[in-house]
Image (cartoon, rainbow, N blue to C red):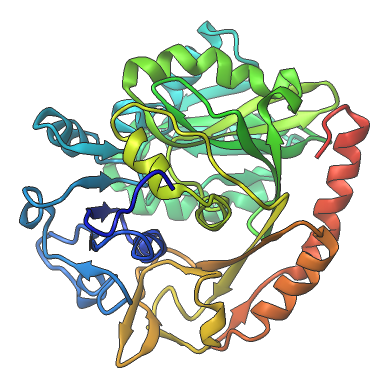
Length: 419
């Protein structure tokens, strides 16, 4: 690394998904503070305790407690642009998306912007209100569709529509939960790109600039991720095109954060689906371990200087971990200490040296496990052995999905995209 950070302090603010980032930074920085906002009329202890007791980090009650004495602020997630801009305005080092998170949060406007830039996207329609959405889905029988919304991720995850009849109960539930907002909300309805595959250049951006080395990654959705270290000049031109066309916009935002433009690859075409203007999950947990000089990248990048990443390993794997129990109940976990650096948990806390996942009613996924090295087959075997040592209630993983990911990689190679 370019300097010793033991005399430096860093503060991480997020929504509970990236406690593991603060834990990782504790290996390099002298003081690491962490805060996940919890203020509301009736807060729950499960919200206040996120990050409490985790080795190497200090949970604070509010970011205002540490503004004066903190050297570097890191915002891995979205929704905090005003605070980032305030801190930058008073002369603080800030790593974050700033208002560049608009490109992810406000899909309808972003899609128009991407079209203006000449970025290839799949066919889509914007439908206003649940009543109109029902009519649209009924008249498009026989088509698989994807329904998304703007800004409020907690209202609805991306909904896959196989037919209106099959998903009607989910739409009924959504309408009930949205209440009076239901018929005023915009729904982005995207055509399914059949026979396409998930791919992204997983990198970071400093004021519109990208490093010369990145991960080229593919995901079996919600199960496993496989990434390979690639030089920028080795990556297919049609995969790089969205990044290059978006560069000037990111420069105007003073964007300084991880970035993954989630893309669907179909033979010789790459369609931008969702920009991930934050730490993605996956692959950011893997990037935390694969990038050897991460503190340098954050420290200098926060002030607009791009530091090239040092990525010794060729391959990286990430496997998602689930428990139906964890969404509504505290989940106690047991694992060998040697796996601590490979396991990256959401909503984690520690009580008397025991790791717990605090329930947030955000679904069953509570973490991931990562491996990296130079032998892909050995890594797949190793990560499967690793996760077998994680013990807890109703834990589920999908090691059987790695062969599917490798099969996809072979297909993409036949299309001219080589991992």
